[in-house]
Amino acid sequence: KDQPPSGRIFEALRASMADKQLDVICYIHGFASDIQTALERAAELKDKYKVGGQDAEVFVFSWPSNGKVLPPINYFDDRDDARMSGVAMARAVLKLRDYLLELGRDQSCKQSLHLVAHSMGNFALRWAVQGLRSELAGRLPRLFDNVFLMAADEDNDTFEHDEKLRLLPDLANRLHVYFSPDDRALFISDATKANPDRLGANGPRVRDGIPFKIVLVDCRNVDVSSDDVSNHQYYRLNPRVVADVNQVLAGRSPEAIKDRTFSPDGRSWRIDAGPAGKAK
Image 1 (spheres, rainbow, N blue to C red):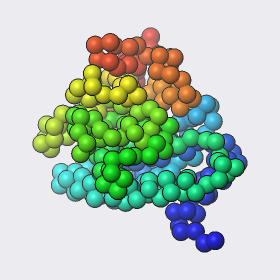
Image 2: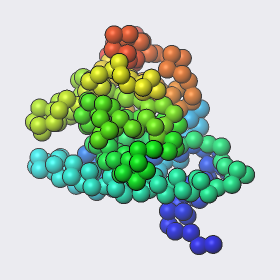
Image 3: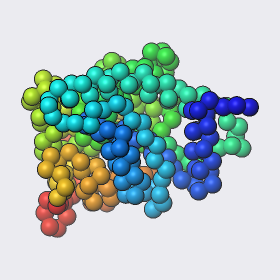
Image 4: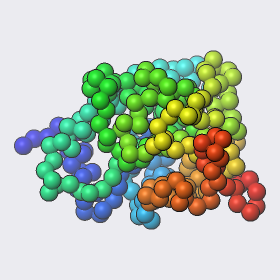
């Protein structure tokens, strides 16, 4: 039986997952990241993100970013492209759901899917959720084990509105929001692009009403690296953040993850900088 291209891709991933016993990480890149940069970042995640100490397969969804920061019009062009790509992303998720529903029990690879969205990739993810919401009448399938929203260039009230990301937790067993108030890229997005306060800067605006499956991780002490003056790329460049993610992927509960401190007032975890102070 002939399969469509999406079916062949899914089958190849399933076979690899079953043969090598590897999880799959789906990666959605951010602003000013063309296809070459997206593939390089995906390769970096494959090298750094481990599931129980093992490698993972990395699948990239590349929306058509201009790949340029300047002039500023590129930001708004990328934002439009991210929004319009939501429909294609939703279709990909629906095709994946249909593929999984057609699998027999003996064909299960018994591995997990995870999703990592960085920066403006979270805005693209919002529109993917809206596409799914439209197609499925608000009943989203639970396809992912962990969803990571990294330095999200998305509104901080996103979990309060059906029209944004309130339904996203339905897609995953657990959702992790990594944020930093020192993120200079998001400060520029907030201050100069007429955007509301950003989710990736201080986390959700309201925390008491969000589901407990949403875990908030404050990275203010570990957002610095020698290769990033913007404090925006810590999800891949800072070793302590990478170590934190790897513990999540290994299946540790939030309270069992090392080098974290819980803040009851913020209902969030803060990654510790270590004995040398703010991580470099």
